[in-house]
Length: 252
View 1 (cartoon, rainbow, N blue to C red):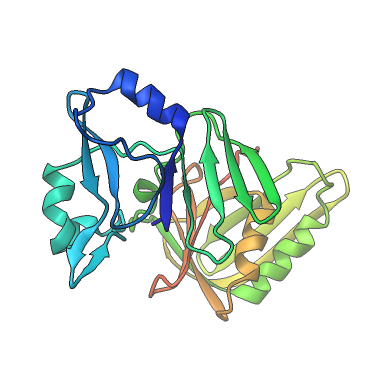
View 2: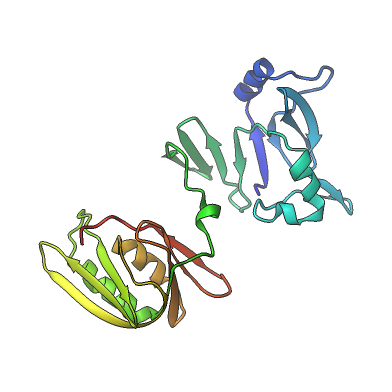
């Protein structure tokens, strides 16, 4: 959750035109901190003012996580029965630099110290990650991380920069085959594995696999797959880390 958020004058002006505003109250805008009043929008375009946070031992609790909000006694009932919209122009993250994040229809702006970074927002609907993080799988592979990473590194040497050639992973009983064929050359390597479930052949951008494997310290990794069109997961039993890697199409 952000450390504080803000509502600029332009959005305040727009809200006075779009929303039914209660009389006799000063409209809060600018920086809004936990414990202060903020403007909210209720069903039917009605506006209201509420204090940010739940009172607890002379403090305000406000850091509810979307993944667990329905499991927490303090937040559960309100999350189900008393939802609202909180209009904001941007927010500040919890950090010493007091980084500021602003949104427009097409861009996000990060501002901290004397630095400003602008990035274009992705068009369309982003992946529904919670739905993709399923515990279901058709194939599970346990493989030596170093052997797998080294093999993918060698395969990646045969792919030119800018070439979208995938590597092919062919999983059968007791063996995972890494193969690639490009204008530079070809590679076929077999690695011993422990496999549960079905055989599968699937393609990946090697750089995505390399990025995940390089930061994992475990000697072996568990890889979960569903089908050649669905994401695969690399995760440990305690779920200290979860890497979701999207496959790519290929011609067998």
